[in-house]
Length: 531
Image (cartoon, rainbow, N blue to C red):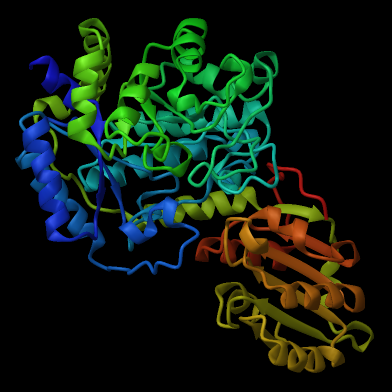
């Protein structure tokens, strides 16, 4: 390859699976004309993270997976150099593609006891096999971020938790599973996106820690990853003035952070990939097309993820970079392509999904992660009509046909109620109906995993819950992000709280078994939650 062709390898533009033919043809043109190194797949333009706050509606397409496979084959056919296909599949291909296997969030795996951390390896392995079914050999996961800020708007449930060693262990297990089946992994977001309160898709977070503080906490999972020869490390769009001569420059564009700290001080010589260059924390910095791509490359990134100015970026790098630096980045990328086996022409989709094995794995994780937050030993007496006490079951944000209630119905027959919205008339009606009951078993299916707007739990529902806890004997089963417990009023008045993490059918069935048997919960909270 010429130097210009080698530079083309550093560019991984985005592909939207559900896009127009016109846009797909444009990607084909980039492949043919610029010898780009790979692609990063997203579901659709409306689902892109930078549109998270907008009103654009995501149009679901049951054929997304078949379309993804077709695009992978189509793009590989027009590539002179095999493309390294990548995707962000932290909790499985389902993060981006409908009707594909989904695994628990990282925070759920963070609840596993040490002896069951191998289940993170199984999640990595199954995810890798699923990606290969689509012809994808590079997963931009897992997070090595330590989530020590409960108000973090973007990391939260995507992190394994706030204990540095546990985050490191689970991340390495997940990576080991990916590698076992020939898929590359990526630790992100260096030097640590956990202790931030700004979403870097929309603005620039600033970390105030010193290098010494980072070495003691945020950098620990990355250090362990480097010791274990992690395939790649993604640089986060966050500023760390203490590492960057006091400047609030994104780490993605900081030579002191990438070349100085990561390369020289920490001794990492693997592949370095930028976070998506369309993210608003960096995408609006330069008026001249190609300048952002040059700045990111010059700072030390080998791969430019979601690069939007391919032709201009290539020319800027060709004009300004030394041949030695171009060769070094090319060699790192080529080693990854060789490890993934694609340089031998092994690029086509392989295998079929195994939904049954996915379900068995999810059930195992459910059984080992469910966490008892508030003791309710012997609370089953509440559900036996002692002293003429009456029990009701209440489902929030799911109807009464949920599997948790159905699994309880034979042993615990009782009236069931549901509240699927915060409609005030419905809440008043429900309040009146529950007056005659002494004990309430509440299943709260948290609407959203992100903390924005109290996880989409409406204020009227929160007020209703607070009132219920203060007046009735209540046991709460929370299906979803445990940080949601922080926003629920009067939790101290509840008799018991069980944290279940996911609303998958396997988790609902597991929770019902735990309740009926009053069995031990093996999980521990991976984050601090007051309530």
